[in-house]
Image 1 (cartoon, protein in one colour):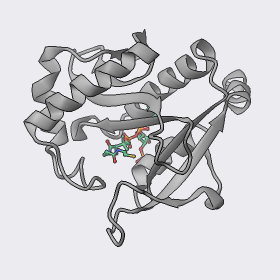
Image 2: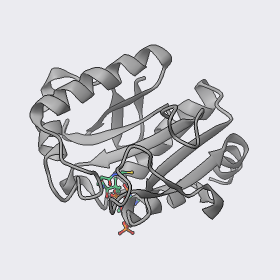
Image 3: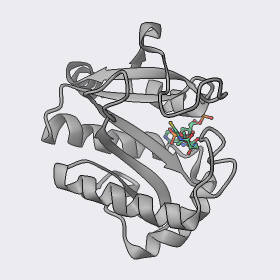
Image 4: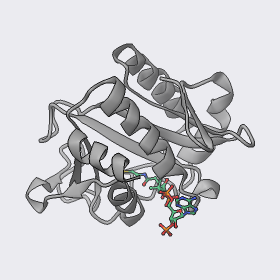
Length: 185
Ligand SMILES: CC(C)(COP(=O)(O)OP(=O)(O)OC[C@H]1O[C@@H](n2cnc3c(N)ncnc32)[C@H](O)[C@@H]1OP(=O)(O)O)[C@@H](O)C(=O)NCCC(=O)NCCS
């Protein structure tokens, strides 16, 4: 998908994104809530893998700053993996370069994806989940109007039992709630 928000361009990956995306994926601060940073090869493989989601209309794609052409990070939506307790569903996610935190870019890009998900794809609901201690990401979910029911909290099946990042919270946003919020402005 291709879209523009006030300050950002949401677009598929391009070859020029590899260097700045690898820089982001290997920054220990950006990756502190992930089991491990990505190598350059893993970054390239991720870009190729998520690009294939494009056939379904989904993808974790590039976010570019309009003013500078700089790669801000990755934001997008994808089907929840079948082994997750919330599947089948669609999730939204984000990860930005550190020098682009604190500007509202994650929320702005995510809102562009929510418009696409609810208006173009007519999804009934979009989910987001993160490690319970990832407050910046939880704040983005709350800023978007997503809500958490503690009954949905879960242990991430892809993370080993006993690992400190295993406890996850789940946030939900239904299309009606999104529309009501958009109407209020
Ligand atoms: C999670 C992450 C994307 C959040 O980034 P962020 O910049 O805090 O989030 P937003 O883009 O919504 O920006 C909101 C912040 O910008 C500030 N801001 C500045 N100008 C703004 C504007 N015009 N509009 C909105 N917010 C603005 C807000 O006050 C807020 O700061 P605060 O949280 O200190 O109150 C970022 O911390 C990150 O990449 N983390 C590492 C990767 C990660 O953990 N990803 C999630 C995995 S589930």
